[in-house]
Image (cartoon, rainbow, N blue to C red; front, top):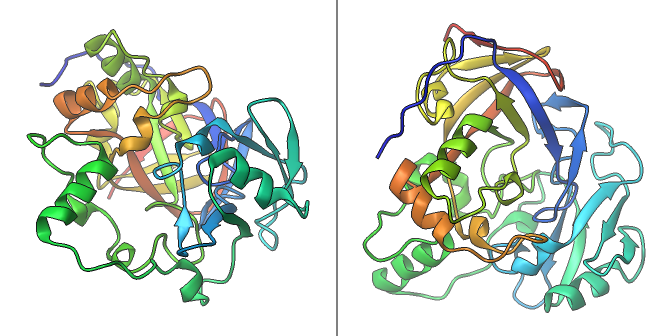
Length: 303
């Protein structure tokens, strides 16, 4: 099902910028952001590792992570992307990433034995490598994918070919803690389309964790209820940065988990599958580094 919306001939603009210092935790609103080859400086600069079986861990396995929030206490630099950050727990208490008991307190909050890690060199492949997986049948593998992407038996799984092939071996592109690409872009129009189609659910931006939120995207830059879909394969100039729009963003079970005052809501995924093939937003890569600020106009460039 595709919804229709009237075009808006005003220029698309940046309505919000977001950075997430610790993978899967709530993050920061920014007035402006520096983008380089690895996305917004400081985004996903820290992550948790499982101290029992190994591997990076996120809100997909530990939903309670999404109730924690992180904020840098010092601005990251290109030489120090994993700057110190402060982590806030739901009860209002805090811990610093530099505290000796930081990982223990986070682990107690989510019910897991974990360690807290800054970014390490992309040459340290073992740090990013997936832990050995037991032999499973094709049926078990499909069941695991359905749990990961929150899909029912009759719903199609996302096209895994949209993800970088290195993710078959590594849990994130080495040198980063991203699930796939370094930038996630969404539009207010897409959120409004979903809210109109599924009035019983809260399509709150906190569930979807974009880096860049755009407004006024209909008209010159796009024409559908989900404007981002029209941009795949194009290049966007935003501020002084140029981004290449790589693919749509297939959504996973994290969008249905509780976030702060938002309850667990599997209907979110049912609506996404029905309205937009389970996608919301687009993945982008940085073609030209630069500065992006709230209010910046968006220009679609020639391929």
